[in-house]
Image (tube, rainbow, N blue to C red; front, top):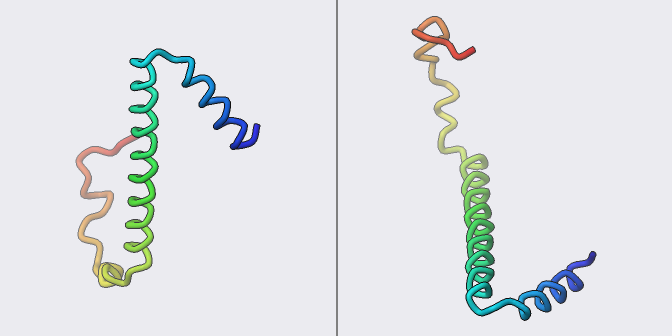
Length: 75
């Protein structure tokens, strides 16, 4: 199904719902949209951090710990 047809079908179905269920659907839609916004923000921040040269100095730092320093290893 294409987007427009899905939207029209959803609207028709929502109109059949009682008021209390419409509130639930609306809350769910707002939740999904907020998750999309959060993911976009997270991806944007990750891209900025990845593209940034801010932490490049860490590449020249010696490793302070090795596997032999572990008391317990995950298997």
